[in-house]
Length: 110
Length: 445
Image 1 (cartoon, each protein chain N blue to C red):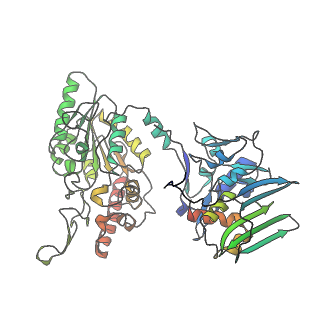
Image 2: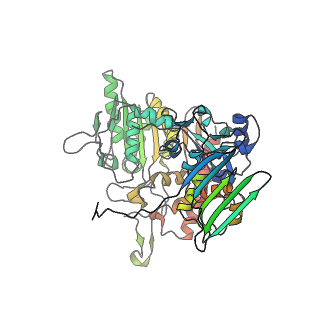
Image 3: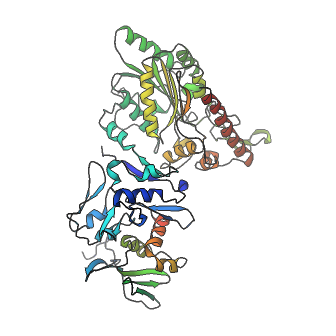
């Protein structure tokens, strides 16, 4: 309503999806657009068909996308929402987002 | 009353990452030893310890609310989030809903998997060689107790965060309606056990003896009931002041005569109801309003209580009562076991139950920390949980090895904030001495 003192600006959301296609499984969490000053890292293993793409800004996760690469999407969503600084664990995180995500979960909100 | 559920608890401090729990789970659930398929996942934590990812069986489960196929449901009886394979469409949306990595993809089967607590007998728990995993079955007590009649009036007037109301209500529920309750001056009647303005605070006969004569009055009442042929439980709920100081003579007398009663002491280590004065149960170094902290008279600094606490429960053992035990509200299963034994023993003679009761107001800690303070007292061996019967002697109720340093307990509250290194050393030495002393008593049998 106009003039409503309870009005709050929509803070935005984290897009989430999972889907199957051609025998593959994809999970997407967050934004895939590379912001100014942002960083996009991709990894593709032809043999296993595993693909991962992660978008960072200031070492904070903005989005993560995997094909045949399983990670805990709910945990990734929390990492994005909490704007967790990943600078200390970034390389390990990219190598194994599931393991490192769970470590951070245990430390930060479990 | 809401239903309580059993749960798998994890103590990270005890875990050495051996992975036996994961193997046990994988074998039970997949028939393989592939620990990547285990539903409980132990992994290294960032501080070089170990942590786990396991379904928490949430009360408000997001996995259930996001599932488009209704394949996940909260089981109202067991509390477990059930997964129905016949409905699951393998969309993995549940893994997005869960923030705790409690449900994840098993790449071999192609389905999500999650802990179902093995229908109440989780295979991982007995597999742990270090007791880092325990299956907490306390919920049974709450569900059972919830069905019994609450014999106190609603709205007892305790301080915020006090555990005594919990203790009173649980105790009287368990003892039941065929009882007479004595509550000498202290927090218990102060909270309203004897009622306000001419009303009674209980649904059983209750009276308010003097500090000095509780056990004597109760003994007389019990004897009169026996004379007229009525089987009632004579129950006293007294504070440490009403038991160890002013009330000690009548308490000791009743125990010596082996009067048939259950005498429960709620030990908050001082006269908390009247303004936090020290009692003989107040521990060394503690601030109270009569053992203040400051410069002191004649330039002799005052640093809290200068004497050690009396160990009243041990003194009661030396009366050779039918039953003596110490308990804590942080260990409700243990408390209930002891309460049952004490009620049974009170039909034969004198039963004494000493319950440690952290005082939010008088001990100076935040009101949400009562159980944590009570737990720390036990984990540091500051408080020892044991029971005594004539047949079996004195026995510890839980392992006393691997105790935390007493500072973990002391720093949890304000009444010890002023302690010097010497005072802390004194308290730690006293804890060790107490343990050794009671160990000797335990080994005599």
